[in-house]
Length: 175
Image 1 (cartoon, helix red, strand yellow):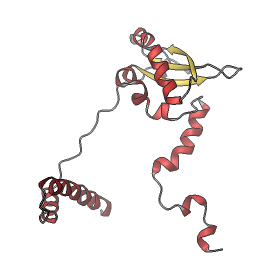
Image 2 (cartoon, one colour):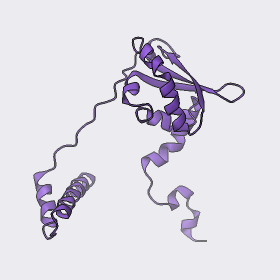
Image 3 (cartoon, one colour):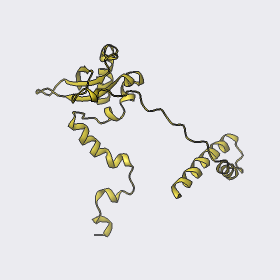
Image 4 (cartoon, one colour):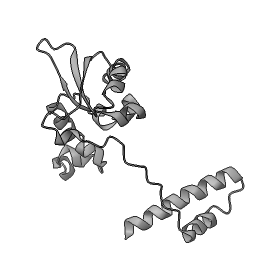
């Protein structure tokens, strides 16, 4: 048996992304609140849509004793509760599509967090997207010089853009 066979399974596969390393822990924490599918928490805006995600957040999923027809509890502000209530059937359909079957039968809308009023004062607006900084002119010129010999204009432009990204990224990793 070689030395590489004695390493843990995780190390035999080589490098892993941070998401792959944390997925087990995220799943365990989510299951503690009833979320069998962590994607519902991590991609809430994609599952229910940006408009609903600005108004409401998933809090927990509770299952009845017989195991059928879970209840999704959603946190929202007082003024947004009627709007979220009107969207409840659409939210249920989208969440069930995320699960892949009719896991959620009911949606309960709460205007405060389960632990108290202070936790219910949540800012629902997602963080604004940051635009990447403009590329360094020297990096742009280097990438343009590397793709200079390519005859096709479209391919040259694509290679310049790729070279720009690779060169700017490699500079950040070195320093």
